Image (cartoon, rainbow, N blue to C red; front, side, top):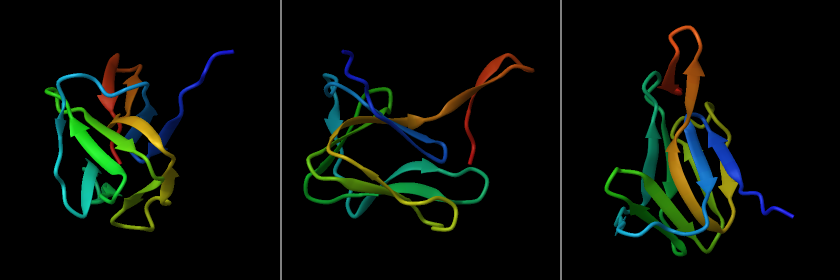
Length: 112
C-alpha cells in the first residue's frame, strides 16, 4: 500500500508534505509569523505563526520549508478572504500554486 502525501491549498499557496528536509538549507529566524505568500491583487498575506515546535528553512532557490512538531495554522490578514486551516505535524514544502493556461500554452502562478 502506497503512503500518500498530504497537500493543503490556501489561496495561491500550496503546502506539500515531504519525506525530509533537503540538504544545504538555512534556518530562518522569523519572529511572530512568516509570510508564505503575498496577494498581488487585494493586498492580503498568507501567514503561519512562529511558535514553539514550528521551524522554517529556506533553500538556495528561495523555496520555503516548515518542520512542525505541533499543529499550526495558516491564516490570512484579511480573515474574510480565506478560512484558517490547521496543518498537522510533519515536514512541508511551501510554494506558490501554478496552473496551465491552455490558450497561451504557459504555466502561470496562481494569483489571489
